[in-house]
Image (tube, rainbow, N blue to C red):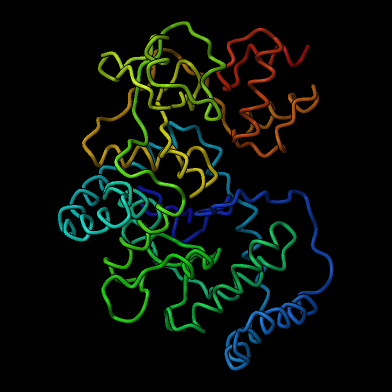
Length: 407
């Protein structure tokens, strides 16, 4: 799901190895090496497919010809796009074309979106934002890969064999159960399917035949795409009628350690601490829980993340992706472009984030690896270091923090 398409990015052709639409946080092993032959692994997994009830005829036709593809492994290891700052990431993804096309799609398919929201409680803009980011409404799926080669390669690979073994078995079952014809089972290099890029297990369990043609066609049917995506989002825990993300202003001083996706306070509490709406008005002083989200620290953009925001990191573990998808959905409801923040934000690119991670790990702050991506573990490590050294604990690195770590 990440590849350049002219001036915008779409994720359909590359597949998020972080991993997209994953209700279980998947920890990919780093610096592992494959042992044993692919053919031996393949023979052993064939027995598992038979034990799970996949037909012998389908196994002979589809599974037996699969081959190991080293190009898939290379793609899976190379995903530096996630090292961009939130500002750069969202700038590239929330394009004027996606906003225009998304608004047009919401209008054209208004009846379908209304019906889906009535059944699943998920608003049209939330569905549409994922649809835009994952495939540009199908336009981004320009190159399709043999799903079974991709999934078998990744299931054999040492990084996430349990995950992709399940996905390979699910892809076989999709065909075996008649949910999708074999000739339509093509997808991204990581094996994701359809215009909102479902992993096969999610396709198997949550794809819907909304247009009544007998197949669950998320490749071509707008009705199936809309209903299936809404069904999956509801499964992730969506709460009907509640917000998901709201841009806010933060005061110059506050207890920055409270700004954390793991910390929810009533909206009234944030209001009492001086957090205001984008326009400067006071927040509703009620008990609705929200977390203060500062993707680039206390001087950058600021958002209140509500309970519904929790579905976004389940869809994709990249915090940049999660915020961008939620933000795009708000734009499709009419929200304005977010403001850059209230001060200067230091730039931390891939190399500089890696340097911070190295320094943190040397001082005993576990970043979960040195990958140049400022993800959840890296943010938590930065926050712990900031608290130890008496710096504003906003979970975003700074030169001051690096200086303290070097001493």
